[in-house]
Image 1 (cartoon, rainbow, N blue to C red):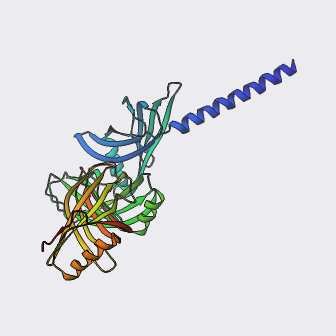
Image 2: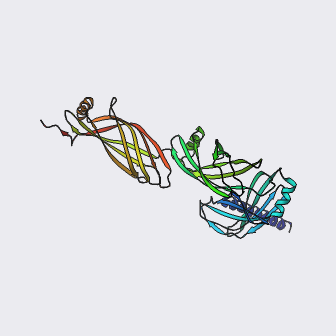
Image 3: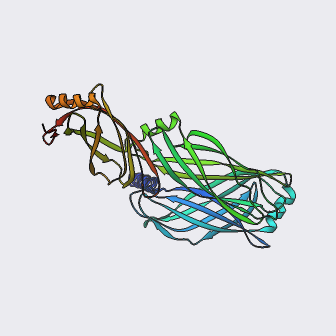
Length: 414
């Protein structure tokens, strides 16, 4: 009997361990990344303060992720401002993200009590909660939190900021261009001026850049929008690019917009994330052939054939190609071609012509006809844009031996 009891206890412990391991595996596999993107203020009534909270939920798994509800708690230090459950449901596709808006209502009596006891002091604002995901075998709560130290004002926030997004404007060998899209609202009866913003840019949690910019003044009771250019030209972005070829880099831009309003400093925090994949080499160019098209005592016409290929998954429009092509060690031809469209993964053949009345080039053409091959070199810069306006820039450099085709040369008549 004692032996049977021992066996039962061992089996129970083993079963509990197996269930625990399975639960941990499911939790780790399907756990989404949940980010509080922004918090805006609204005043729907004289007694209610509205918090418009944007949650971005990233499904990192390979399966759809259905969520059924979201609960939340909003507090300032130890004072509870709001809590509740929102029956928001949806499904997030594999490897995708969904933006969920949480309309939270706070009783203004609580806010006014906080203002009367802590006016001019700083408090820690915490927004926390859980996103409930239906995993069929079990509904699992995945937590999120947003913590920010803020100054308690004596009145409602006079302005709020909404980060509408980040657009990649330029990808070049030595730089990354971004445009931060900002929306501002002035709720007061007085103008807001001297709006200054400071920001930091992080790539995969590593600091890349610190910067600052100035926004336009805002009239009373108005809204405005701005695209703030951010250009990254640092060794750090080069290292990230090298270490993450073929993988997206998670960029985080966070900072504060500050101004002085009625002798008080107004500080509005903001943050926004953007996943960017930086390509090492967007274009591939090969010197295919050099042709002698026309040869006379006074003039020669060279034809140069290039194979140009886009290595990007989208169409590149209005591509310009500029720079010299070295025909021989001592002679180079400058290329300038515009308005080319490159299709994804497709090779486009370009046939360029250059006319010359230079005696040296005429003589060189005669020598090339005899040689039939020459050592050529490229030093070209290519630049175009995608359908969403992102400028793509790249270089094509290198040496190669190419054939000289004179089969269709037009020679002078005696």
